[in-house]
Image 1: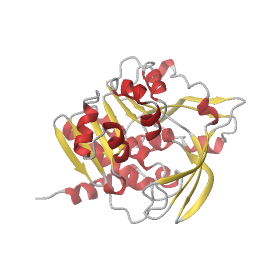
Image 2: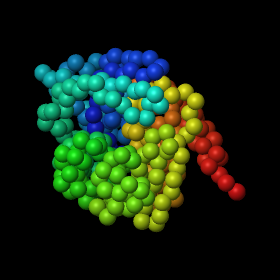
Image 3: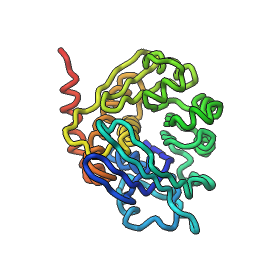
Image 4: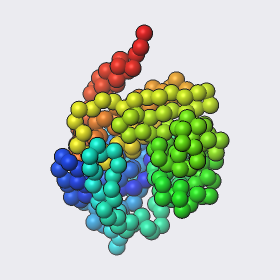
Length: 301
């Protein structure tokens, strides 16, 4: 089933206790697409500047990724982010940001993508998320991400977006900030009252909490021994989750639990390297094997 993602494509510079990289490929749409493409065809919508190299474009060369929605804007520069992680690496410290092309007009959804059945709106201005969603004719499932910047500065716009989508993926700090609730179950339930049918509250190395109108389900993170760079873990998680849902074409409470588990597995591969190296190299067989191991760990008789 067709899955559309719209989000950032970036040059990332990252420093962690395990090393550093400069101007590597990053961005929410890229991490999401590479994770989701193992499960379902992905339609990518994004914009880059004329400085975007062909070598980065080739990273997205995957039989399940349609890049017809990638716009290369002449006279513009690609989005750049620089950050660092310390200690347990649960939180990034932003060192520098150059919005560049992201401060300009949003990309258009190609006419051929307008019939997409599943849509993921990666983190960006909530009014822009609604504008992009409005270009898709009749999405059966639309899910958005957000961040504290929009919660603090564009609260009313974000509430309008949440009223339009079927699901939201958000981290624990943001869920508390948006809902006004400290308890994450109550926070998730408060998010559902804003419109979505389900909320996935990410808790970093402690996994995620799935909240639906049928109840709650805590899913731990996959216990990864090698953690080199957490950048993109959340978007890879969303890619595994939405990719699996698009592959089965069903969205109910039990399928959502299975999808969250696959999101956790996708994220576990992404954090094993800087940039896209591990996520690009992983095979579907490796994903399935780790998923079997993970679900086996969760089984309690």
